[in-house]
Length: 426
Image (cartoon, rainbow, N blue to C red; front, side, top):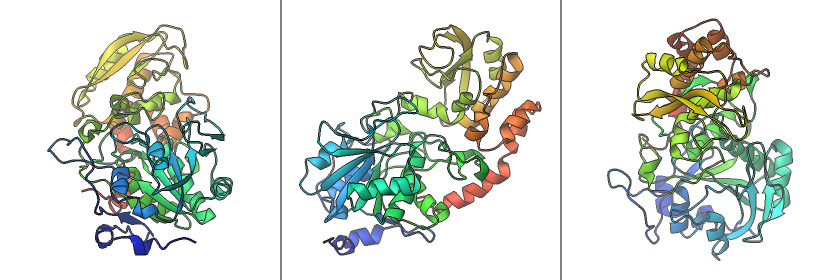
């Protein structure tokens, strides 16, 4: 028999819970418990993640529930222990299953891959594969697992086309179909949550790199996104609860958190990668290398035949907070593997002033103008990444940087107004 969750939540939980614009979501609040060690971020405020607060409360939010966790290698404590290992060893949690996204639960698969169904060698728990599953097929996975509550804890990178936020969306939708409760444990947006930037996806371009109309750099945490998804996009809201962080400010970058960085995917090795990714990932839609197969993916861009004129033209744009260096490299895999290519390295000098989306557009424009071999991918993947045909067609028509950016101004303003209703940290 399931124990009543509501009766177990403390008065403190009720006082600090947050309900967002017609959703069924509540934010689990800080409850009594032993203090959690934390390295104070800038300003001396100790940051505590959603998991740290859940654990400090003795997992009261999960009491009486069979629990499954959607996570990957980023689901760690600040002493680098994985939350699944921690919860599995704790008698207060009935952990019954793990659900792995793209790249897998333990992170052994490259882009576009997963680990499949298997028993986890460390815990013996069944690990179910969620990658490329959605709707009723994913709901059937949750039903087969026998869990009552699905918990989500994955570090996002802050860009619409980073697939973990759509794993979040798909799992919320599937949990609703399967009659499961859904709990999101919050973590910092590594590139800060200052604002939303870039074009908003148009519905006809929906794919796994963008299910719903949000901006290219969303400026939200996963808990805020869960509230947005539940309130705006799910046809039937899931029973949702979020465990928010304490001590996080919207203008902070990842190094202020005091948390160790675990690459959320093989080509996101550092927080600096995440900083440029919302803009330079657009080069996946071209015939230039986006730096996969190098030690600086998404910071190194290039192709055979590109010379120093590209870096010079990019620097002439006067983009704030960034400079471009003429660079030569040889990718070990992916585009132009084993060949020496020319291009640029992106050097962020002032991350508070840096605008990755505007920078990415400026680099596309100058690459097309300075290299005669420039081409979009034949499948128009650039339209999936930007969310419409607008960026590609304007650049092809010879538009300048301001003209391209102005093309999404109105739709971005609309998304910003919607987004504001779901922000948990101010």
